[in-house]
Length: 121
Image (cartoon, rainbow, N blue to C red; front, side, top):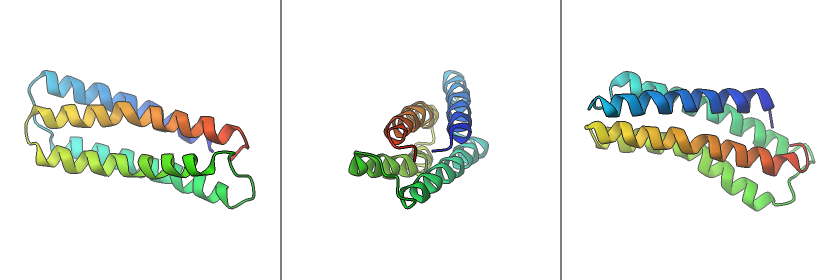
């Protein structure tokens, strides 16, 4: 997996988590900017996942390929799910949902890195 892209994804995700938590503390509902920011993070995650999938076809597969694929599916689905749930909850809880999504994504990316590090995908 691409180390620089993984680090960028983690940094952006944690920065957005702080933003969403601050907005929730101020009792703000998710704005369009908040939703677009999560969508942009989703695009970043999509690029990361696509590169990982391409890496699967170059012959070097992780030892636990099924687990790796499961993490790929979960990682790519997480941000869009957060946007949908935040839109359904137009209160400050929507920003809490986005914050939780933004806090879990770095964990998923790190786990993908761990699984891929075994073979260098």
